[in-house]
Image 1 (tube, rainbow, N blue to C red):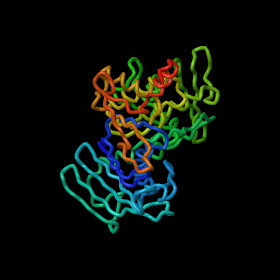
Image 2 (cartoon, one colour):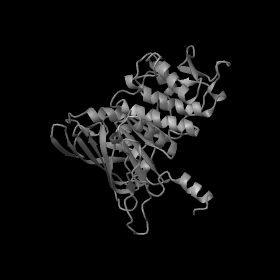
Image 3 (cartoon, rainbow, N blue to C red):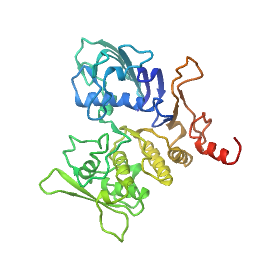
Image 4 (cartoon, helix red, strand yellow):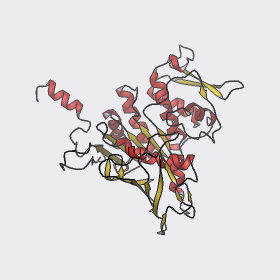
Length: 386
């Protein structure tokens, strides 16, 4: 598990040192830096997966496109470089400094510093041969393997389609940043068992049946059918929400089904110690469904998968709190981070990130101004209290 990420001169941060847990929730106002934390991890993942021997951080690829170095380096304090550092639970540390001209679409590894879980220090410069953004001689690969397998789901997920690409699972091992491979992953691994702690009782422990069972928690009565198109690298998805109807194409069902499916497939395809990043898991879900999503993601984290989510939903938060209160996930396994825009008037009125704590009953120890408090503000207004 990644226990901390440090960013320096990256996007809107001068310096950020952010603890991470089995389940980490990123919240805050728009354009306050929540996505930047995820993007730092995705850039490492994208480069390691798509450019194995490159000594440069690739800012544009299939998972994410961030433009040029000028758009990645902090505009206020940065010049030509930025730093990303990761800390692992086994004691390993990784720190990269990347540099590039402001109009370049990738950044060179200026230096790398690392420490293995065995306490061996390593330092290298840009003259070294790099493999997966590490010196080729570096032998500590556990975190790197997890970064390469990382699953990242953006808020802009693929909508309903008449058919879906079906490809070799070696080429599409995860659901894709827009969920574009979710149906393919579900079909190719339909008979594989999922993590025991996520198994719905009374249902076979295979990926397809369990995805179907979990989807029914969000959409009661949901039944799925996937068929391969003859002589084509494509599959069709049939969805039935009622026993009184036949299977329908995704375009003829509620939009939320195809938005939730990649999240469920990603979680139930994960193995222990995998990393999943999800932006706005609440998209197209009603409040009850959002709370159920919070519980589902908390259960996923309790099963040994590291989950990092960005959300604006207090229902997601409350679903997580309920899972903690039920004793399924410990309060120490949850990190809550509330991001605020950096002040531009020179005032120093606190940190960019505040981190409330949960107790064993799911209670939040403090509620920073703007931290999921809009409902209370509105009710106070209607009551005439402000």
